[in-house]
Image: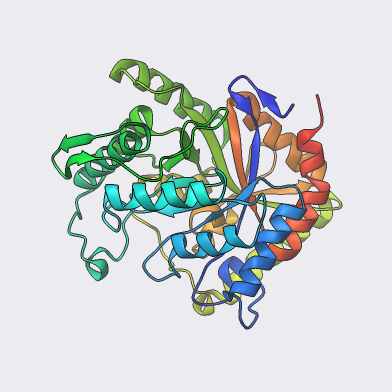
Length: 363
């Protein structure tokens, strides 16, 4: 897979945990795990080992994602945080102004991941509990933020938000291939796919079998045409755990041992357990009925112990085997890859040194 694709450069991001409790997805439970110094070491390692940036998760029970991203941008030079944001937690004009300011201060290093899934809505005063309402509001939020970033004197009278004569200062600076911070978005329900087809820049998928993702890419492209998408073509990304070792045998032995260890420590882990009601998460749990290993090396067993999101399915193997699997996703049209494994700090180095060079090599 060349770093250049039909839609641009393939981009590789990592994950930086910002959690109140240590031990996220089996990470080393060290003291001061979410201190500024520790998080900075994570971001600098991302930068040093060849990654473009990293996803920062969001949730009411986590340190504030935007604040963490701001601090890390001040301590790095090329690190690009993918900042998870929830409409309802933010108002569109407030967020558009904050993100435009941070983007200007960081010379264009801000990326935005719009999240519409359930959270502790009542804790921060959000009353939009219906999925249909949440996704309708999300579409309006994204549409309005994009206008605020690209237009002046914005007036909007929508179902969820109203503005009159709004102009941001400072302005978002358009950069080559990027008129404003990129909107990433995830979701697998019919309502979510409509939002992605019309308003997102990048649709993120979890680690599903290639045939399933190919089907979704086709459906989203057709949906965008049907609904009259007004933006550049939708791009696609993959968020998945990648367990890389020197040999295939070692990788699978470590994967099985890690699943056993996580199962033994299930009650002590900071993540919630049980099956989420989200459509995308249910799709991942349903994969277990099709086998422990799908495609060449997509491991579904972690889902049995209550893994969520990228913790539900793993790509397992040697660096060459995992790179080959990711190339096959790239052949489907995936151009954005968000990878990770724990311990995060050790694995960002290992995979930066062993996996990334294979992904960037021609062929």
